[in-house]
Length: 200
Image 1 (cartoon, rainbow, N blue to C red):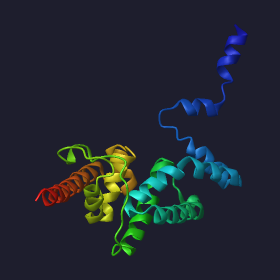
Image 2: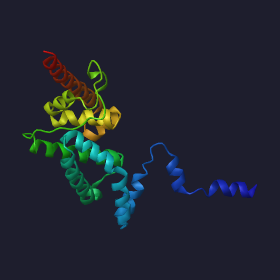
Image 3: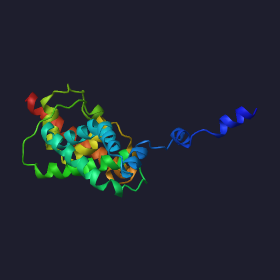
Image 4: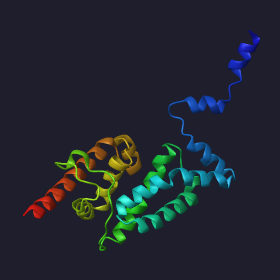
């Protein structure tokens, strides 16, 4: 009887926290880094590098520029990690930094002609889902604003929920839903125009 009581009362608090639905295990790494453990940031970098690169590439439409942006993004995160206020998940804060920085870089380079291979069709935004290497997708994405590309990347590539997108973009859910709808419609119009031109 006493053994059973002891087992139930000595459960580590970290384990208890990990079982909570809202627990953000990234916070443990953040706290470790802020306490002087530099390896903790390496773990954050490894965990999120690919996702941040995907966001940057989807917005910048260039793999090399995306790689450069990723380094800048993580440099910014490293420099400002002490400002992370923990009111949102760490990943949400990181994605906001990634989106904002990538949009800034895209605006600087908007005069350049860029291409990217898309890994996903725009779901029902186009009549028949095209092949990922369809040149018309490239053309349509190039003609969208960086902000439109950002929300499409977050929703279709990263499969974030509307709430997560809203948090990442710093707006409410209804605004995120409206922006996603408008971006999808702009993509659809441009894509269909490219299809019509190809069929003419």
